[in-house]
Image (cartoon, rainbow over all chains, first blue to last red; front, side, top):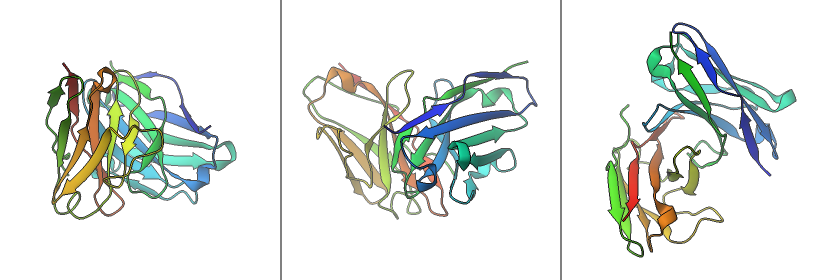
Length: 119
Length: 110
């Protein structure tokens, strides 16, 4: 069955970077785009961007441009999201999720990774 | 770009129907038939319940239906059940390979 399994919770200091992984199983990673979505505590879903593991193409939301980097390693069916220059308001759960045509048909989601930014 | 506009809350009694709106612009909801809806229970990842405005993935009960008129999409939940109590989010393709989510609606089953 299709699964997206994310790395565990992280605690970071302001100004640091965090790299979250998302390992796909049950399907071919290169057949789908992977979105990253942020959800701050008690808040809604916020689209951060996507990566196409088939070639590595990316597109980032303007809000995160310059701070986010999405990469993939197809040899281990894993994609990564790195967010730099962390601030306290980056404290959130980060989800990876797959989409076959970039139309928002996001059919499988990872379990989420809590990133806490605190001094 | 601002989030799509959803009412913060909605409610209904068991067995009733409730409709949640999602208002965007002529550059997203109004332009593309790529509106999807997600259900999220507390502490859980979102679950995919509607895509391309009206289509339901396999396994999603036909009590959930979607529609669109102009710049506003809607999700209707018929025959409300206790397990439908959750947060609901709309999402639209916004052109230039971008997506945009709504702010979310908390559905309470009275």
